[in-house]
Amino acid sequence: MNLPAEEIRALVGREVAYTAPEPLGRAALRYFALAVGDDNPLYTDAGHARAHGYRDVVAPPTLICETNQYAGLPMDADGYAGHSWHIDVPGARLVRGGNDYTFHQPVHPDDVITATWRIESAEEKAGKLFVTSRATYTNQRGELLAVNEETLIYVEIP
Amino acid sequence: MKAGDEVPALERTIGAADMIAYAGATWDWHRLHHDDAYLRARGLDRPVVDGQLFGALLAEQVQDWLGPDARLRRLRFRLLSMVFAGESVRVTGVVTGVVTGVEGSLVTVEQKVLVAGRVAAGGTAQAVLP
Image: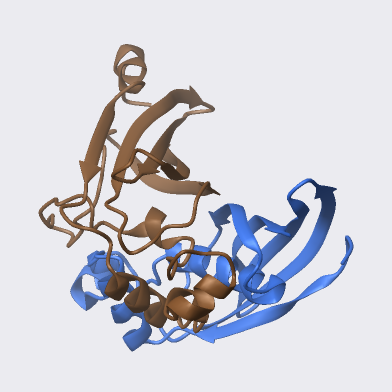
């Protein structure tokens, strides 16, 4: 791996937080559900959601973990406008290792979301660099909504 | 409900319009999902479906099956192979555990996203049913 050990160690503990400039909004929930093809009325019908123990419509569970809308970042050359650590490993390509979402509380349209990303670990194993990050999603009252742990793997191009 | 029970499969064809809708809904306009020149330069002949969409389908399958009183607590998944514009996916699930606690039953489901004979993603969902 063409990245010195001290640079790998220095990745751990890097942290960045993004706070949305406005509440999530009902349209974001409805748009996401429509895009996925999920017609569950919990996401669009407040009466139905209240009948099942929620105070209002709720966001489809994975919405909070998957949007770039909180980040407020410009679109890059690849058309991507979301969070990135910009880790450059010469001669390696990036592979996504997977995600682990934990849902702590339902997400509602009036939530103003802050996503805080932190690198939890970075280690080289068998010629590959594994970087594990955790995103913690909270609202304007500091309530924990969800956690998203994801692993990025940098693999040397032979 | 018990270990070994099958969850009804969820089937979806992911066309270009669906991919555009998902890109918009998630504010993710990466060229991998729509730009022919970008794809050709990387040896790909069709747009690649955003893998996070499969997370949404895994959640949908479990929520639909358990009903509106169930709360999804955890979803882990790995992307195993690319899915391309126009392909049809089939999400399958098998119950691997049911544990009864104070909140209700914690149900664990092992899931797969299958497409044209390959496994595009694999995951585990956990939900509480009061």
